[in-house]
Length: 227
Image (cartoon, rainbow, N blue to C red; front, top):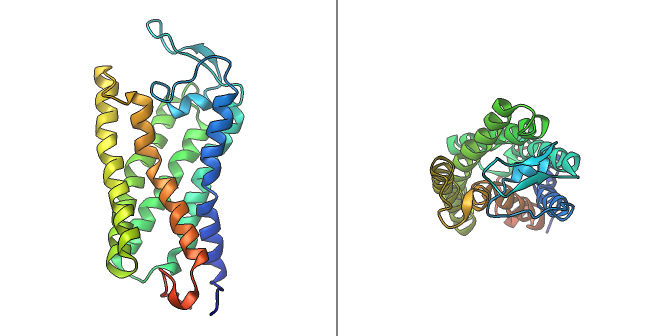
């Protein structure tokens, strides 16, 4: 059994697995806060906020992230890994329209965190929101498209999981927007619902990357490598 992969696919899988750093960076940045950080009420982007100030005059939350440089670097690195991973893992999937659609959307979603990291929420709100929206929308639609293709052509459970993750992310996005507009927690709060929107993409790319690397070439989940 040959475990070798085309070098581009191997690097792409490693890059997707590298999305794990995003979760590690969040934990480290959260632990550095000297005031309470709420997973339910603080945005992920608060960890990259470069100022120390109250959220608003009516909110008890106070934003002050000593490791904002670490978090913004993590956003940028996440975007790079998603974008390059989508480009390099292309050969790991059998050719087809939905492969192209899914990987293109995931690649576009990678531009989102790069914008978020380069333009923290208190520095350039327009660019920051544009980047976040690109990741939220394109990333979850990408999971659905690529998941449907993987389900049909490669591995039903993993494809189904990817598609469901994207659907959950889009549903959570609607609830997240309602929370922002109504100032109502809707159970998880804006911070909690934002995480439900954001996390499916890096989590599932990690899973796909691991599967690409650990399976034999001739029995892989993604076995139709192009020469």
